[in-house]
Image 1 (cartoon, rainbow, N blue to C red):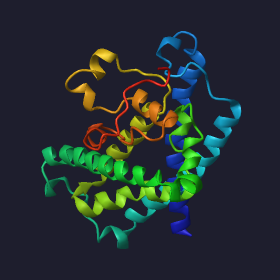
Image 2: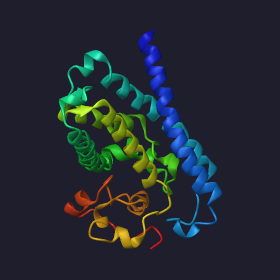
Image 3: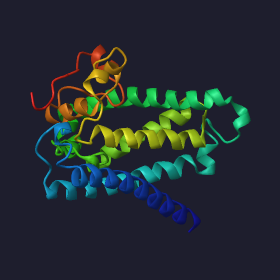
Image 4: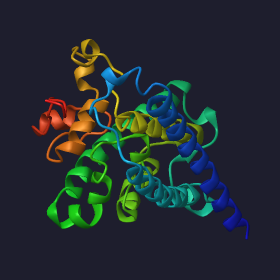
Amino acid sequence: MLHETNYALLVLMISLRYFFLAGITYFVFYRILRLKIVRLKIQQKFPMQKDYIREIKHSFLTILIFAGYAFLIFSDDFRSKTQIYDNFQEHSILYFFASIILAILIHDTYFYFMHRIMHHRLFFKHIHLIHHKSTNPNPFSSYSFHPSEAIIEGAVILVIVFTIPIHKIAIGLFLLFMILFNIYGHLGYELIPKKISNSALGKWINTATYHNVHHKNSKKNFGLYFTFWDRIFNTLEQKTPKE
């Protein structure tokens, strides 16, 4: 019963976090500012009501799976086998922040190659197509996955906790960064000025425009946070969906 209660609390916490962040972002950009910032909209059209309903349904299934991973990695028996630590004295405060960056880099690498595999004809139609039904992504597209893909997506946390020492708070900050960046990537609006995204440093950041292009042209832009894997494997497309 205790384990069931803990899992239920994790589902509630992850649901509240996701629907609060995606919901408030949707409310601001798709309701309050919809007509005032239309120039920032990557695709001029807007999703239909049925798209939001489909995405929210699949997002909740994803949350159930992600909560399962959270329950697993923080259960005593499993956690003892990982490199998760509680005591800040075990590693320096500098390493604490470095571990978050390392987790982001590991996730970016994991995601790129996993994502390309998901686009193979053996997997795309039956699994990844669910996500690509959002041809005009919005904040609720962020967690809209087939359950099988959600399992594969979430497995990155296992890679991280077995690969590097990481504090439990650092895990929380990494997961917060992940969802915020994911919502930005599916926002449907480009918030980063071209002057920045085209700069020497900015060109390595995966923008909402890049990911929007991927939803329109599924053969390009497989990256998550950065563009370097796309640049290395020549899968980067810089034109916008309007071009």
